[in-house]
Image 1 (tube, rainbow, N blue to C red):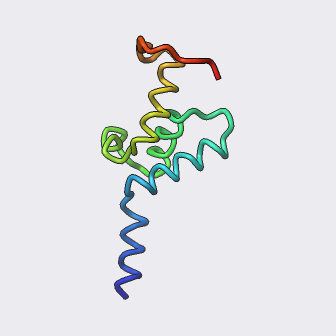
Image 2: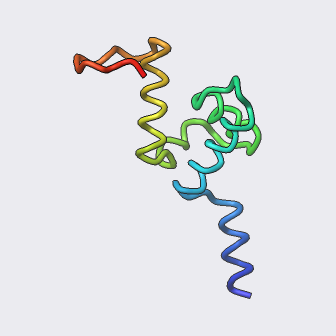
Length: 85
């Protein structure tokens, strides 16, 4: 009975690992969707407030979002040289 309760709570409330998995899954399924768009899509789909999401973003996901935002000129580029991949 406790396991059922834990599973129900896990489905209702997201942890950072599960949130990152869900976002990665959305990005892989939707080829044209960026990480930023995937987070907004996830929030709309699950009736979550976008402002409550930052505490759920893991460090690897944050780095991917930062790289994407820099590429789209949403953030200033760092002074560190980056080799093109």
